[in-house]
Length: 113
Image (cartoon, rainbow, N blue to C red; front, side):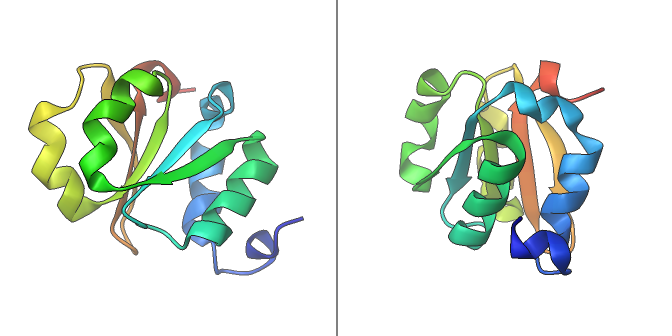
């Protein structure tokens, strides 16, 4: 079991998984510009969701929307603020990790239980 679940290290991820049970319908989890510590994030999501976590640079974000149709994106709030006007309509803010300033985006059908 991932160490982060046994401590407060990954508390924002644990809270997110508890509040968004429908995320298990996606396996594509995308970390934009290292918004979270990659290995802690990837290990935890792989365990909880059997996910296929991957990191991408901000420059590749627009192209990834077609590749990962049901992708869940993690990005810094500053990056989100820059691109939110050009997001595909189906992508919504699912969760905000306020303490660390990370926004979680995904398809609207995964937002609510």
